[in-house]
Image 1 (cartoon, helix red, strand yellow):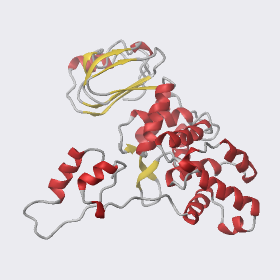
Image 2 (cartoon, rainbow, N blue to C red):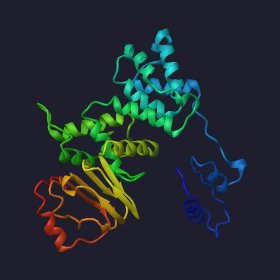
Image 3 (cartoon, rainbow, N blue to C red):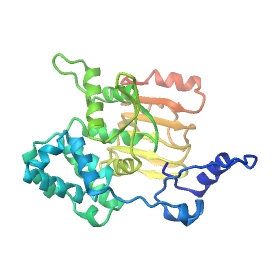
Image 4 (tube, rainbow, N blue to C red):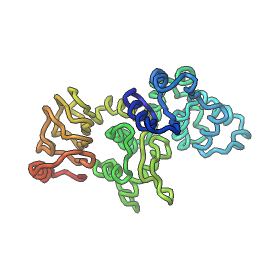
Amino acid sequence: DDLWTIDAWNWIHDIAFPKINNRGSRIIIKTRDAGLAGRCTSESLIYHLEPLHIDDAIHLLLAKTNIRLEDMENDEDLGSIVTKLVKRCGYLPLAILTIGGILATKKIMEWGKFYRELPSELESNPSLEAMRRMVTLSYNHLPSHLKPCFLYLSIFPEDFEIQRGRLVDRWIAEGFVRATDGVNIEDVGNSHFNELINRSLIQPSKVSTDGVVKRCRIHDIMRDIIVSISREENFVLLTREKITVVAEESIRHLAFHGSKCSKICLEWNHLRSVTLFGDRPVGRTPALCSPQFRMLRVLDLEDAKFKFTQNDIRNIGLLRHMKYL
């Protein structure tokens, strides 16, 4: 799913089609790179996915908004606006689900006004930039309590399976979730999680037998857009291998997605969370669990792949505001 490089294909090919296997194998590859598809197989075996048929697009939007087909057929105005909405979405499933998640929270009489706010690019140009405008509009329509929860997802790597409990506990530690009268803070956090699921902003990846979503993923296009919005709002800083980063002083959340960061220029004592994926960071960065992280609330080392020193443990004990480790 979502193949991007020929190296990845070669690795899959060697496993899927071993030389000693004479029985034949078949494998389906999904990619948005037409050139890469041509390098994986002959043109006759490439299937180019088309947008949804209008009837399928309408059924998808109605299902997401809990509107019956009979209701649309009996209401000429509703039928007209639904048809316009799926066309404006370019008949793309991700766009329809994203917009449907917003419409499900609005009265039908408000749909016309919302339609007029939608960017029109997807009708003729199903590009990433057009999809970005659509998702950005969805973000702008989120309730204020969900916006930081949504942007927080940009911390995790592409195609990463996120545990529900881990995410909710981190939201709580960050202060994104507040207890309400008669409802404990964990239940409120789980409610926020379910709201993002219902709006199709995150995708269930593991569901228990009683229907509770235990793990989730973010669609790769959706994640690219979240990362971009987070960068624009100075919300999350992601570091990858062999790069130099100069960040605004207001950055509050830092995630290491690689080990070689040559230089990071920011106010470390302003950070609220640090998350590490992979090896220990090297280069001109503070030591792990540095006393410079004096305002740190979240230190997530669950996916770190290195041994901790006695000095690391001693420094963690100095982080007075720590609420999640």
